Amino acid sequence: MKTVTHAFCAVAFAILSSGAAIAKDSVSIGMRLEPAPGLDPTTGAAAAISQVTLYNIFEGLTRLDGGGDVHPMLAKSWTISEDGTTYTFSLEQGVKYHDGADFDSADVKAQFERNAGPESANKQKKLFRALTAVETPDAHTVVIRLDGPRSLLPFELAQAAAVILDQDSFAGANTNPIGTGPYRFVKWTKGDSVEMEKFDGHRNAANVQIEKVKFRFINDATAQVAALLAGDLDYMPSLSANEMFPQFQADDRFTTLQGTTEGETIIATNNKHEALSDVRVRRAIMHAVDRQALIDGAMSGYGTPIGSHFAPHHPAYVDLTGRYPYDPEKAKALLAEAGHGDGLELTLHLPPPSYARRGGEIVAAMLADVGITAKIENVEWAQWLENVYRKRQYAITIISHVEPMDIGRIYSDPGYYMQYDSAAFREIHDRFVAAKTKEVQFRELEAAQRLVAEDAVNGFLFQLAKLGVAQKGLTGMWPSWPAFINDVSALRWE
Image 1 (cartoon, rainbow, N blue to C red):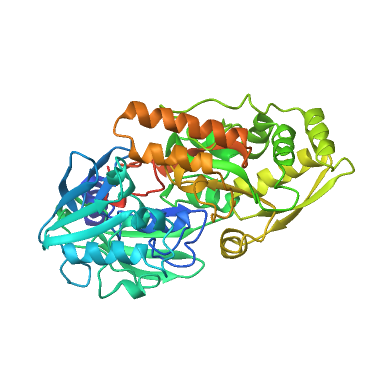
Image 2 (image 1 turned 180 degrees about the vertical axis):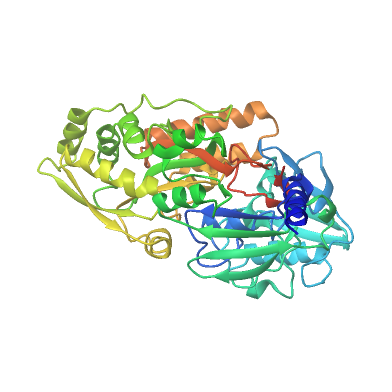
């Protein structure tokens, strides 16, 4: 009996040691923030929504790859009129929603018109209002007519705000999202996780290895590290505890990925605030901040200083960090010139991410050195969205703006929460949108960066780094984030 047992154990060990027998079909992914207020990216502005749902549950006409290039998705191809004002999209056929409904051109028309409607909360509403008509000559063709040339339209349609929902189920998408993506929604345990499972009816299902996925919400940096070390978390796309990254790099149980993001971290400023409406005060704030010291102190040295609202890895980037060098004496002089020589008190709203909470303490100390008392108010994400973003009830806040190429959308809109109103900037933006060549696009992007910096609209701090950590054997992760996307269908266990 002992011999049989030993033989059985030996065979069992051999079986368990074979890759085929132990191949995993699930993955747990960590996130700093929980989606809020729901899971519908066409009505919510938070990046956490797209991190969970984009390209997993929901799909758009186009998609981005890990390098930021545009590819077909629900649209298999498209053509552009010679004047750049008409796009004709040919749609994939046989596409099903997770509830079995058919996808067709009528869904695209209904979604885009809903995004542009008077009650729309879509963060790209201005884009959809630029569509003068959405025509559906047949079930698999969509013709989009624009109020002027828009060379970036395929890129813009690859973003979370442009995903397509079924006409009959869109109203419940915040709590029961139904899309055409490779994963279907299973359960949302508030405060803990969102679970999904592979959608066997997806057109690419045969190439999707991961059967089940759980997005776990772990805001605490120490808890993220503990979950990875314990094996309870398979992948943390963006580690909050930057100081722990070298430890993971040295541990052969893990794969590490160091890249960049589209996240411009800024001291966002209410330009209509009584004191902050004076450009001298806004410039004083910039001179008061030592960017590199902030990066070292709050981000363990991971991050790239910026001097305007633009990603340093983009070929049109202009290094404007020298426009407002760290100069406390200059900051004090500007404040005195603006009538605040005896000091100034401002509220500083800090949402949960570590870059904000850690960075906010350091920024507050730097501002105090020049006579600005920053009264810190730590707020939850839902509070930040309601009071800062929607109601504009704030003076300054620290936030990362993570949408790619968002300088035009943000600074051309006087109603945006920063309330920057510049006819000169809008003219630059209009020229950029209408540009037909990369040369003209880059020229206008450079002009936009310079004007935003000159007006010191916000305090420009640093570009967020992406420090990803995964259990050894997991592959397919994006080293960088051209948009905040976790494409689970690309993941594999080796």
